Length: 240
Ligand SMILES: Nc1ncnc2c1ncn2[C@@H]1O[C@H](COP(=O)(O)OP(=O)(O)O)[C@@H](O)[C@H]1O
Ligand SMILES: [Mg+2]
Image 1: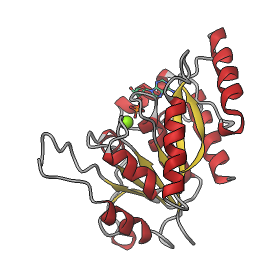
Image 2: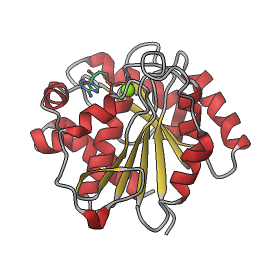
Image 3: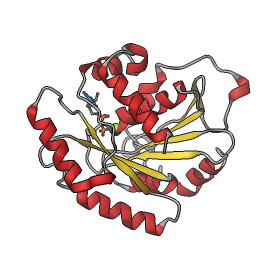
Image 4: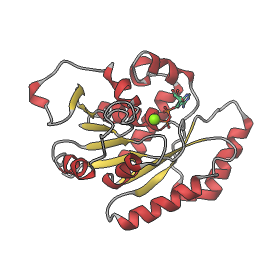
């Protein structure tokens, strides 16, 4: 079976891409799928975040070029910040595509985390994955910049057949206690209609706390609202 792939992308930083990538990867894994997480952000936030989940190495489940993180979860770690580490480190899209093609039959899902800006790493992520999920912080002006991102994605999906198709926009950090939150969601729905995912991720301090312990909310506080939201996202994406 071909691996199903999802990339988290947005040209804006701090919108919940990495948080979503980690929870999507772990959530799919908890649902019994074999998951590979690619960290394409040279800053390596996702790489650091999942290291705490490290399991004992099991030689039976080794995948070439990937780190085994936990049962059913593998990581392609960040290449590191090229401005501070290896100045000549450049992105090798051919190698990435080769890694992806080798996942067929060995992994069920590939989740790709992108850097804050849509630089060469970001666009590489988009062209190696079938579907794109665009996390958007639920705030006024959320649509600002999003239209441009969606137009660029449309151009990319035409350029790379079978890749970079928009799966949906995901509202994140929705503050359920604020009346404006509903207004913002309505605004997004009016502008995006079926391009908006059904799942909404609430603002939840447990996510920040879990991250400080190097854990996901599924491990740290499985009954929290954000754990329920991310479980819902996993289900929505599995169901296609
Ligand atoms: N739903 C949420 N509720 C509260 N804090 C969140 C939520 N999602 C992300 N965060 C926090 O916001 C910050 C930015 O999130 P992150 O996932 O790193 O964004 P990005 O990868 O898009 O830059 C992090 O400190 C993260 O812990
Ligand atoms: Mg990030």
